Length: 315
Image 1 (cartoon, rainbow, N blue to C red):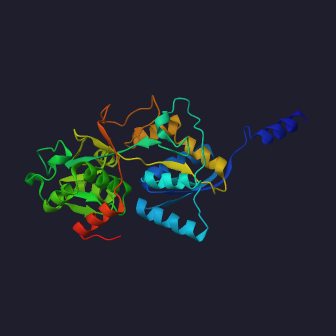
Image 2 (spheres, rainbow, N blue to C red):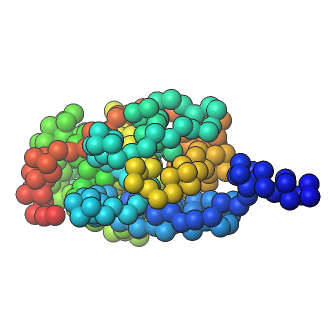
Image 3 (cartoon, rainbow, N blue to C red):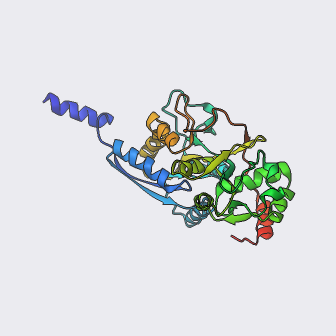
């Protein structure tokens, strides 16, 4: 009798009961990293299934816009590198306020009162293949130098949210002529950061404007690469995650978001080359304790159109 009563009370309160259900996550984050986090979350919640749609930020946003227009949005969670679009969604009432369950979570990473969160930090930096380049660039202004002609590449800002941040931030600070100088220095444009980092590791390029964590992952595999945090500031790229207002399982979605802030997930982030956001979590191996950073400003449509015309790209 007492066992039955205990189980009944536990069921009513959700205490000790396994969580079940499914979640859909739309993300631009590196799939292997997302899968590692999803696996860890599902190990703690064995009745839960997380389905992932992963593509570049531009394609993720295009897919979501189409679903919203059709009146049938699917994701429970959104996680990609375009904070202005998160601001738009929040302004339209499409994101839920989720209170953090981590006591020492820095308030500056809970945006708009907890409608979306930063769960780890990544920077756009200069990556160098030390077998191809001996004189390291120290600042963004160094890259148009003749010594680096034909050696440099960056991802496509139409596809990569981090690259869109690079374009907007550096053109805002240095003028669009900076990219004209890079074009004159034979800057190449690859589709994505992972593709670019693999080519850099193989020596197809000598330098890359790319994400720090991905370069650390390549270094861990034995690639002859070095991360340079420019003295005029690495670009801190917001990559927020939020729970959608139309989620069919918002409680479970909030549980996933808060899992990403847990000690276990923060350690996973650090192990995969990211800076954690929660105080006291370990930093990634080989990363400096402090980074001079520039807050990213994604390029607007006019700047992106100029870049596309300059490099012969199109959406």
